[in-house]
Length: 481
Image (cartoon, rainbow, N blue to C red; front, top):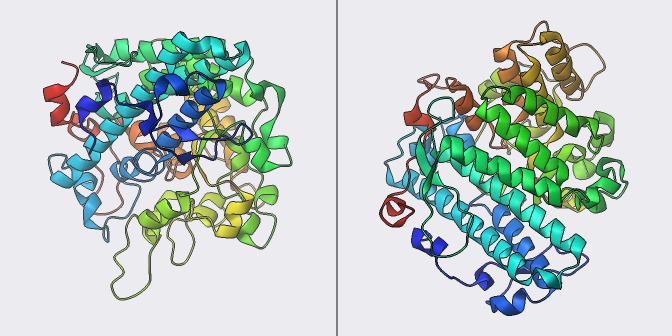
């Protein structure tokens, strides 16, 4: 476990920087320590530092597993716990004081703030040595760094602070904007989210000429090439992040802001809802686009995603089969309403020996579709827009959800249509859509909604005892107090 005191000390950037070529800097490997001044004396060095941040975020301790299909989805009761291995049991029952749970919680905090320290160090050198960059590159790097700082802070706040609706004045976390030993005061929830919004707003100014403005990634025939535009945070991902923040805060006028931002991303036509015949038009799975790549607004590449998924999801048949994070047949039926035509159930869950194959790509498939974890998809924009309209115009909200659902069903019949749309029907659709993407726990939390649980003892009552992870003890002693 990383000691909390490390994040505010002068540890070398070389501990986390990754070497990358100019033409393919997202495919990177860890290198030895280097001197910071030398590293940030060239444009290539800045690219390597930024690549290092993305690589850190994609590791299993963050979004490569635990912040997506690991810890955060365990907390959302995504899986069947009758056969769960012991390492997640305490988390599944919200026993945060148990040692195994504490290790996971402390790791999320430590790695989250470690990543923020990496971002702040990059921003420090951008201010100091940014003249070595061309004007356009400098804007792009600064814009991405500010957006990533907001992203990481926001997810830490969603884990460790009460929801805004429960206590907007709770002082739980620091919003760190500087790299160094300076103590950062704790922010109220209101101050913290305003800081997230400020970083995003500033990022948009620097990303106004983002390369994604010149292309439509989903329309490009070379998917490895198109992926480069979304395998990094971009202008539209920042718009989507702001929509996510506003729908989460839900102060006066926030739903209107959230839906407008979500619709702006939809209307950009940079991304497209999955088309079944395009994504799964062949009999062999080597070319299947299980991750719905055309919808990706922002995703994180990692060649080890299959390995991480195997550790978490693979079920080996035999007398000692205890599984790990599984979706039982009964739970699958409950979530997907027994619909065999729902491509999400059909491709993400239904696989003998691998209960969840969403990230368990075959080696051949991985050559066609870059292994990655979706951080934000177009489907979320439809769901945010629908939620934003639900109270004011239920028919418009229903139309948005039906448009999304129409892309999810394999036949051309009317199964995608809804009789009506209310908050519970919308929640059920979110539950189907966000499988193993780390979003449902946060949705239950912001709505202060009971967590749906198919196995005994049934649903988990909404409570801050469940929704607010404890600040690590070492932070209480050495942190930002």
